[in-house]
Length: 520
Image (cartoon, rainbow, N blue to C red):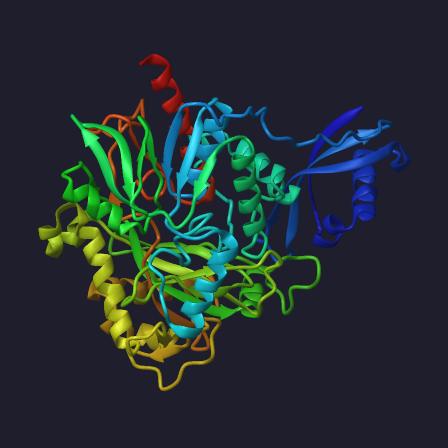
């Protein structure tokens, strides 16, 4: 007999299979000898009270041997001779669009401006050690997209958009740990995700798809408002009747190309702010209400949302046991982001703390039309680069000094490897963002006593939270409103925010491509 059960236990009990079985036997008044196996279906942490508890949903196998379900790939067939569909970008939207196209019997041709996951590492090291930014291969561009070397967080609130479990199972089938389907806030880790991305690429190639690296799209071939192919930096013309545009939130050259060709796009609100680093020990103490975390709890995350003068101020991409990374995509700019390894075992934690923006904030840049948000974003990043001595060092300030508007006489060593430069960050950020963040940090301390400490360091800017542009598409067909056969997709087009939602959107676009080809 099988039985599902929800329960709340101590971290130690959740960690130890024998203790858990004993607890369940007592709780259900079942002879523990009859409980052959306990399968954990869902797991989350409840740290709202002094004693931290673990919420579990489990399946009991009573007088029955467990059967572990095998997670396999869908039934793919060889598509090497099938109709070709171009996918621009090999991030989660592009890769999962490719897998779905194969499932639909179509051949994906992925064009990725950057390098494969292995070769990308050299360019990431060059940013950190030599302050050199490769515009085509960096933390944002390259196989797997921004998520590959920016943590691999899989949590999404967008469960209504599609089948989250399907995406998780595809990741598991390609090598991810099965726990990602169990944990409330699943996470793969920057050290683990590259192998999974490589396995996805191998599946695409195995079934007849094609992946071209170092291939940047330089033009879209359009006639009578219908796309028929692309041109690339390799002096190639690649033709196809359907093109999925999945370039990510930082592909400014693509936004500029669309604008130059008078293809409809629009400015989109996003959020911008800073990235703050604390010791992980302090965050553990605040969140778990204890002197030390102990061995049975993971490094504590946090999530805070406040309102300051009708603007949202909130934590973004919080990385427990993680580091801050240099994420510029062009020379002459400084951009921060954060990531954690799979074990989240670094001594520091970091989070973006950002302010929600609206289109009125871009009014001084109205001459850029739909690229006004891009211009706003770019100006701040370039100012940060200048104030950091025209290097990839990041302007930084101690947290209490930041809230008081005074320069820090020194900056403690942080996880940001290119280094820091002490700067009063009011000279980097627009005044309204700076003042909103100052108030926001004080409100954060009301919710997390001890958060506002001068041992914490603020790095600026955190500016690539989401795309500053939306590429409008039909709600039903997902085709561009103006260009037939063009499918704006994922985070860069303004329709996703993270790995899972981007992957779901990629699948949806692929499905609509199939529908369109069947009905033409």
